[in-house]
Amino acid sequence: MLNIPKQIAYWTESADDDIETAEILIEKGKFIHGLFFCHLSIEKIIKALVVKETREIPPKSHDIFYLAEKANVTIPEDSQVISQILMKYQLEGRYPEYFPSKPQPDSAKKYLIETQKFLKWLKTML
Image (cartoon, rainbow, N blue to C red; front, side, top):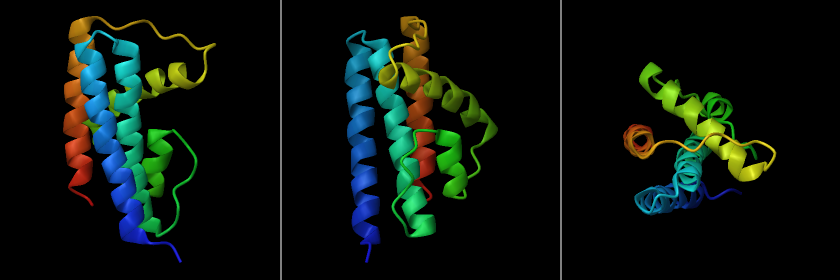
């Protein structure tokens, strides 16, 4: 039997670690890597929500929109844009043939702030 609280804690703690890593990377000018970790934090908190909703192990997917659907979460319009941006940077981290452009420092910091807000909102559903 799946230990639901333990699974939710795992995904939540991992999401927190990833957003902290994203902050460090973006502060150090490693924008593509930082945005990859922004994506991971959102992916993992949604996986915690999938566990809460389905009481099952979440799918092995990196697609924020697909996972949100599984979690029965409607991504607000203001968070859909950052979700689409983060999807672009998660691909680069996993598939070397896909190379997004390196964001400007101001854009990377803006994306980090938007990710933090989205992450905070998602956590209210746990």
